[in-house]
Image (cartoon, rainbow, N blue to C red):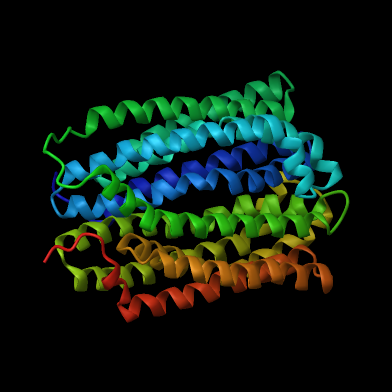
Length: 440
């Protein structure tokens, strides 16, 4: 393996990559807003439902990051490479199954989720196209995870930049020149994802030199290690997305025209930028955590994670504060609806608390998963997401009549509570007992 990169050498390209990944959704929303607010609400709602199904791919990608980085740190790169081939085989099958599910059963899925009637027609079009190409979404994260585990963080950045340019160009063609609406947005997204997938496939086969050493572990043993971390980590994400879909179900029940769902889509696109730095730090720190654990440097791993968490909290809270100050002018880029513009400053102010909790939750939670302590994170996530996010939305938003503002209160309580508990778990050092590769 090449010389290990520093935290900031990993962070900078990952951060830029995530900025442009979020920018794809931002551009889609901006261009769709020229057609109408309902189309924005339809796409935002559809994406929240699609996430429930495609998140199952994280079973493998989450486990792969932990397994690969620990073995790379232990100078056993050939095992990390075998983990990729195992992951690709499994996600290929999952991707085909989920793609077929969306192609044939999209109307039934959206009806079950009680989507607002005014959003349903466009949501069906978008969900069937994007969900029907789940196979691409099944494989792409594995290729990105593999490159990052070996310290190749610049390559995914370049691929994401290319994907953004393609997405913007085809969005402009399909929306403005061809007047294809939601169908055009979905088609542009698919084209950009196909190109990104091909580029990543080429990079994986050219940048990482094949290690021909004989495996001292069976494929089944490696698979079990991946599942041991990946299954609870993915279950956490699956339950989170199910919870967010329940939240969207309650939001859609707030009004028949989907105004509150549209507000959530708009605010979600802007607040996504608040936690990009925290997420990039979480990914970068998790890579270093895996390497350090593989080397047996547990105390060093403990200290640098706490330091990085403080930086992430500062970045998240400052970003949210900036969004709060600039919230109304930012939202006016998308819409002139006075009902929306009146509410968003309150939502962005609540989001400051949310981002402090989310920064802690992301960075410490990812470190715990990489160390092998994934069961704790899933238990905490299920309990508090259901109680605070889902229950809070129904209590504050539906019962008490705060509507979408009540939703954000519930989301903030969820992230903050989980962040506190993740930090307590890290400080206890119980995660050391869960490590996969013991290298003393």
